[in-house]
Amino acid sequence: MAASGNNRAEIESIIIDLLKREDRDALPLIYANYKAVLFGNILRIVRRQEVAEDVFQETLLKIWKNRKDYDPQKGRLFTWMVSISRNTAIDKTRTREYKQLVNIQSAGDSVALEQSGPSYEMGIDQIGMADWVNKLDEKHREVIEIVYFQGYTHRDAAEKLGMPLGTLKSRVRNALIELRKFTDV
Image (tube, rainbow, N blue to C red; front, side, top):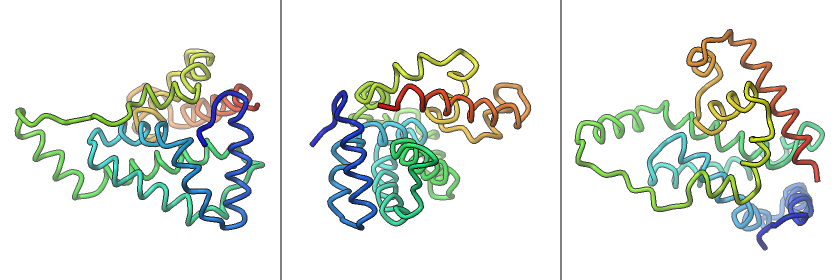
């Protein structure tokens, strides 16, 4: 049951209900409706297909294990799951195993990285996220893209953008508030 248009809010509501009831039927619905965007988000950060597949599985497990932590009063299920996928991917890039993989692949320029799965652009466009992000003003769009879609930590993003960490965090927060306005269906 893949979501489209006005059906997104209904699907999200069904998934939330299933998670609250600890019904494992939530997982196939999450997979069918959010795999492209979650996987795309992960792939943009780890940049390796096989690593992204593992991180996606870890993300689904974290969503399931932390289902009781989701609070609809704090934001949409989609945003919560994107945060989990992003944090899981960033955590993976900090592991020794990942760093060794990057060094090995960087050493051999002839190694081609295959990315045959769903792309970030496809996943974001499927749920209309690109349109929402493009509605943001430039300063908010910039921080959302670097933090959520390029996988930078807040500290690294602030450094790259040449702004104080507090300013960056405020812009991210304000951008998410604006995005919520676009996504409330």
